[in-house]
Length: 375
Image (cartoon, rainbow, N blue to C red; front, side):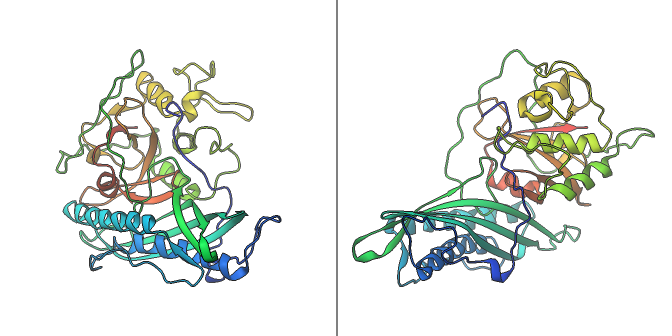
């Protein structure tokens, strides 16, 4: 959906210890089963594929093709081997793009938990949760220690002749921006305007913009409180708010909560009037949870101004993205840290992410349209 931001939330704390990586036989269909060894192999295949993607981004990792895992009962199809080979190659290219933007990762850790296995005849569907943490290399010296995310994936396995299973498809379940280790292949579409509403001005993504210092006025908004809220609830939702992972996405709802924590006051009125912004125990305005509506409200209320360049953002500022350049905003994020050299770091829902650098977002989506808001 375009009017509501695309985002998927995770409603429970993830167990990522070594003992929870594989759940052989767990949650398998009662009508169609595979043995525990095969189910465990499904999990190892998922772990291997996602770990190799992550490893391609680590500084010092030599570029090589995809190294298919060796399992007795499970393997990648020839088509998936080619797909993953191209994907890993694209991630090496992304790493080079990141290096040109002054960013690198010195270490990484990916863990995969098998959540559900369903088998129907010769088709198995495996749902997994990936938890990845990357360590920032100290290129400038004041980068955060780490960035991390959780992501959900669905893998499809097909049983061929001889009973051997092949991985034939792997899809990310989240509709928001892909994780840093997710290959991107879709080209950007031509831009179109959204007519009849307050328009935000796209921001440049070029490095070296003139700084625009953010002043903290007495009695004004508390930007540190906004950042603290976002970094507290980036993975585990605040139970005082409804989540919208099944209703168009939670990321704009999430930034609205953070802005509220920093001093934005409700402006009651009709829930469909974009000039109003509010939330209560029973309902909320569309501008509280919808990406486009939030932008229209923020611009019309004068609570924000547009920045000319994304690198001018500071803690508490908001970044929105239009992935396919169709004029409709698809995703919202909040800045929760900024380095001394001027790199903003974003925290957001979908894929639930902590302190992802602006450089890494641009490296993954160089053709997207970006909107930077000074709050």
